[in-house]
Length: 243
Image (cartoon, rainbow, N blue to C red; front, side, top):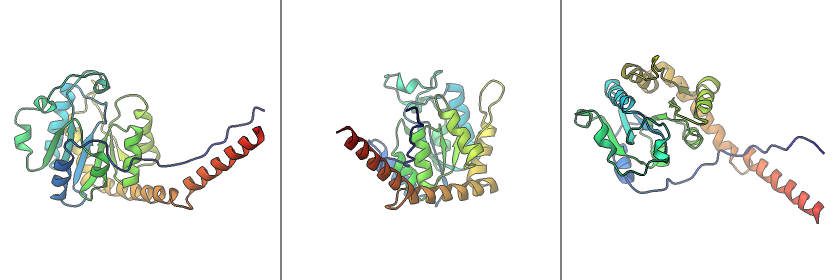
């Protein structure tokens, strides 16, 4: 009585296919035309939103970086989690800076609201992930070996971002100004650093090691599989004792 509970480390557990069809073919067809590891994928998850000012700075920052990008855009809001709450049907692309889509049509693809994230991260052209660091996105980036630009918005995302940047050292994190805004020059610098810089190369090496470790964990004789087997055995024993 009063003993410590058993812990069974399992995972990483991720979906095998993204749920949804909108924009999927367009995204993957565009990625097929890009060079290996040349594209940074930008997405704040199914619920994350930015303010209009921050949306503008991100747009200009991606443009200034001169790096290829695939950006999933949502309509701006002053509430970081507004996409979970707002049922309005609006075209998010209308909130982008004037002329942005025309100026970046050769270097980027911008899609509204949704992209097939699992397939995008698994694509050989994807070399970085600007992410809100939701746990599903963290696991998916690890499984695919894609280094991260950590941009947490709410909930546990700040903790996850700290683990990725300070603990595992597989992510960079842009710095906000005193008003809380991440400015375009900072965004451009960290994007270039991740995609082309020496620090980015080191992050990619460490993330590849995590990718290998995650694959080994879920093999037939891997640590995750053994933990699940041990759990099943222990639960079976408990059930027999009760009967």
